Length: 506
Image (tube, rainbow, N blue to C red; front, side, top):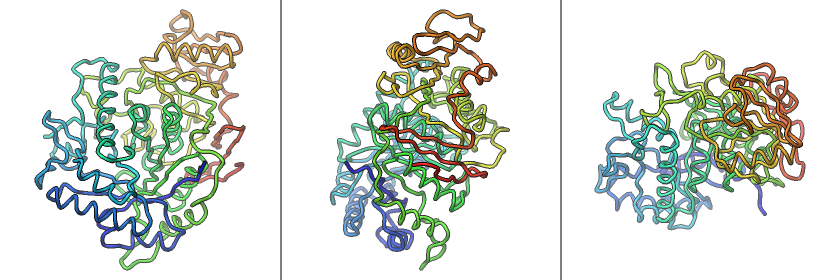
């Protein structure tokens, strides 16, 4: 089975048709690319014209021998999307999301080189209610991506969103796309997407910890048996490029060692300075990476990842949002549903796993928070970790040695699986009293032996006694460790600035 990682970069349909250097030069100067992520903006034209242009672009890429993913993000910014004779985003019920007609998807697929369709930053649009449109209209227009639950119960909203995502993904694929994927700014909804047939695709660098994003997306890919994609995003808040060429290079290398299936850089326009152009430092680093890793064999991929530390949580979309500037204090994009102390538990669990390096209350640098005043770092200490949702089964969790139970809900089947792994495999579980195997005093710190393993009942993840109990599982500070089937181990020593690493083993 081919387990090589496919390498690409982000470009635009105009670049393809006009053969601009930002499209052609990296492929010519490096060892080529396996695919491109091509941004299309069809809503500027009548449907027939847009469909013809899509067919043309696919044919040109076919001539170059390159497969492509068709990416769409105009719907995240434009309130009006019917400049021609078709509305590409507005729905009769008042919601707003990408709406591709069948003939257009079939045109993209006409040359046989369409990998799939991507809804750019899909989870961002859902949880922040098309924030870019809100900002563009100075708060006058607030559009949900899907109809919202009328209940304030987060579980009811989660179940509704599951159905909506599945229906939406099925529709896109039925029109002719082999696969459908999003692109995640925040480390949420990976599991919901994967369960609905939407490929997890995490952004690294940007404003979050790269390997924290990986751990969350990898758990979704493992639990639901999907591939794993990775966007190495050069944006940092409002700056592009906002990361150094060396940081970009090491995020690409991390994707290789982490078992990612497809990785690409956003965006290739940063590879050159002028037209006609030669590669700048970013382009040279990409070309170096392509020369070193394109087609390089691996004996594993993400399906072989065997994490030793797990976080099981009900994904209510909380990543730390809520500040006086931008991020509204709500869940699922529903202003009637607010975060709770249970929503925040997984952030505190990650703080323990990263030896205190990740934030206490948020994961991301684009929030106004004291912990995010420090310079951005891509890589945090982490010892073979992954996140699973509230429906994880025993087989998904079987490699774990330490596990945290977080959030407002975990299914009975998952709790039963965890209890069996404690008794049979020697799993150590950190759980609040509500998830304890037997009634426990609400504020007590208790260690409960159970078969080969134990439960640590603790309602305060900052308790020093807990840190002492779990220290043997957390690995060495300043290192990332990844474990795969067949006792394969990768160890990466993180640089002082957090932008790079040295491969110690692999």
